[in-house]
Every structure is written in structure tokens, then in C-alpha cells.
Amino acid sequence: MSDRTGPRAAPKVNTARVLRAERVTPHVIRLVLGGEELRDFAARSDTDQYVKILFPVPGVDYPEPLDIAAVRRDLPRHAWPRTRTYTVRAWDPEALELTIDFVHHGDAGLAGPWAAAARPGDPVSFLGPGGGYAPAPEAAWHLLAGDESALPAIAAALEALPAGAVARVFVEVAGPEEEQKLDAPAGAEIRWLHRGAGRVGDALVAAVTSAAFPPGPPQAFVHGEAHFVKELRRHLRQDRGLPREALSISGYWRRGSDEDGWQAGKAEWNRQVEREQETAHVRDYPA
Image (cartoon, rainbow, N blue to C red; front, side):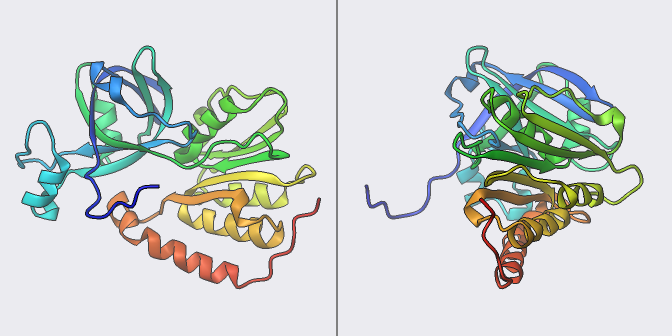
């Protein structure tokens, strides 16, 4: 094991171009990115692998090719490209095609409107990939729960499960028109939850907390809006007795904040949640 010292290397900037765009549902836009530049894309085995798409600040001149280390060294923070984090829906190393799904709610936000306007040939720059979860083959069963932001990772996880795997899947979306066809093993039970005019996460929390779980210790993947993730973390740790190492659970976003604001406070939010919940009694999960 090497003993490395000194500053961390600046993240590598990947470049690609839009190849195709598709409306998967009324509010989900799927972009397929490609190009020879992706031959060096360091794909991960994680089913939640993600990239951080870079959006230049209008009016700012950046070095070509884009050098994040130089940008951070030479430009004030407000001039750095904005980043938006998106899960990789699929990666085809033979075709060099990277698929990413975007939730689009009109003109609000940064990435959604960009995806809606994207056309074949448009350039894209991004950092990554990162990641940290993949279904463990030794798990007795799998719990997958989330909102639209977690759906690409949930779909990728289902595709990675072996044929005999058991899974309980809870996905909350706006309405039936936002459901997607998922490729899942026969042992996966998928529940689509429609929030309608309700608050994000309420239907999901109600469904998971009232569900009858299969026997044996599960591996759980729970991601999406931070408030419902907090509620489900408490439920799974305290009420269901799942150990921390069995959980991949985190807020992808928080209502009332854009990604810049959420990322700035995410670490402290998570520390506070851990402090609140780990002081409570946690029982062992029944065998």
C-alpha cells in the first residue's frame, strides 16, 4: 500500500456529445451520450454510479480543453461551472454510449431545461464516475425504495440481480403516466406509488413502513428527497433493526434547495441525522 502525500489530483473532465434524446415519460428525458472521447470512461461496477455534469457560467471564458484544476486556481468560485449530479442509467462499452435520465419540470432548474433543449451533436462535459452500491449476491433479499431521482439506480440494480433474487421495490412518482417498464427477476415485487398533489415521500414512507418484509436480513437501497430518506433511515435502523452496513441510504436532493445549496449542507445534515438516530435503541434484525 503506497503512502501518498500532497494535494489530491484534480478530477478528470470527460467529454462527449449528445447522440439521441427520448421522452421516456411526460417528465423524464433520456439522453444517450457518445463519442470516441468516452473510450477512456472509467466505468464502475456500482449500479448507482453517477457523473457530475458541468454547466458553464454564461459570459465566463474557460480554458480549452476544460481544466478544472486551472479553473479552480485562476477563477473566483462564482465563475466555476455549475455541477448537477445524475445517475448513469446504462453504459455500453462496445458502442461507447452513456445513458442518463433527466426529470424535467418545465423551465425551472438548470439540468432539466438543458436536457429538454439538447440536440444531437451538442457537447457535454462531466466529472466522474462515482458510486458506492451494487446488489450483494449473498443478501437474503433486497429492498429498493426511492423517488424519480433514484429510479435510474433502482432500475440498474434490478437488471443486475440474478434470476433467483428476491426484491421488494417501492417507487414513488407523480402519477401513473410516470411509471416505467423495469427489467426485473421473477422474485421482484414492484409497487408504484402515485403522490398526486401530496408531498414528495409521504406515500413512499407509508408503503415501506407498513410492508411485510420477507424473512432474513436484507440489503437496502433507499435514496431520494432528504426528508423522507431521514424518516426511512430511522424506521429501518430502529424499527426494523437493520445494521448500518446493510444500508445504502442518502438524500439525493432536498425540497426547497437546489443542488448547490443541498451539497453545501449535506454533510452536516447527514451528521445530524446520524446523531439523532444512533442514540436510539436499535434491536437485532430477526433471523
